[in-house]
Length: 260
Image (cartoon, rainbow, N blue to C red; front, side, top):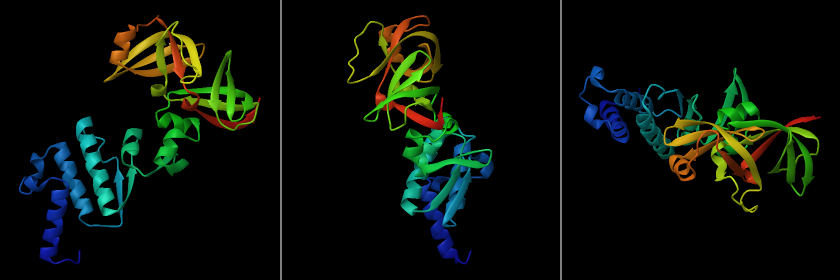
């Protein structure tokens, strides 16, 4: 596009090198693996050196290790070139890995747009929270507020959270599963590390790759994400009683704007 042969060759070679596909130059397309083919597609898009690139789930068909490797390379390339990329994905892990800003859409409407860290840690609605990996989303009500330390009632359970929300306000309590630590029943927990500590019973344990997802009944349903080593050390099994502990700052409250 407006370049002479030498300029085209130099640019193509540069992008092939950046995407580590120089050794594929003389290979037929039908002999490429999924990851190799995707790298070639990226090189074709980037070598045009446009100001804006649109990618619609480019890595959805790839295995997890290949997808992660390509995400790492793509993030490095975008930082190096300064190009703007609109990256469409249904996987919040991909958005967290690559994006500077995230827009979360449902049914064609944007529910939240902000810097990635803000959307991850402060989702604006239960739907956004669920998309960003929050598995504990529990309706409750603020019953006491003192110097931005709140008491939130969920049925017969009182939780402590940080925030500035008026008494009586109905809220959604959001807790990420990795922020819930399990302790053996009867163990003393220092309030300075976990002001919220709920006696509960394990109802189910599900393998989740290198981690385990533990489902709990604490009067309210909770889900915790733990390592296999933690399970072995505490000898966790369904039916066993434990304490679920989490910090005040582990809770993100979403106000409904309504009162009971």
